Length: 140
Image 1 (cartoon, rainbow, N blue to C red):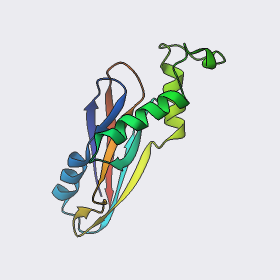
Image 2: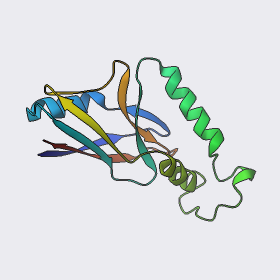
Image 3: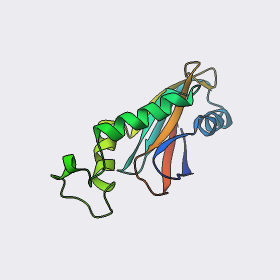
Image 4: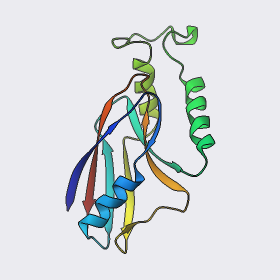
């Protein structure tokens, strides 16, 4: 078993790929067969495995979620009570609740078993920059 905390600085809403960091962590561990668990330690962002070839996919996902869960200052969101940190606060929590805060990726022959176009992303749901902590846990 091996663990590491990875810190990512975000610049606001969007998808931030960290596949390279996860691959390096697994390679340096020297584990041939296992399972990488990825966990984000926050309630207003999430994790996602998604296509990493065409940036339009990431833009479309962001646009879809902005329509699905608009900021609290949108009239359709008047019912929201939790607004402590601004109009993106509660919508960020909703987006995180609809997505994942942990992922599991198999390790085979010392490498992550991701598909050709798959990447691992932190999905920032807040509009301002944050420092996000991601726990990488490799078990055998």
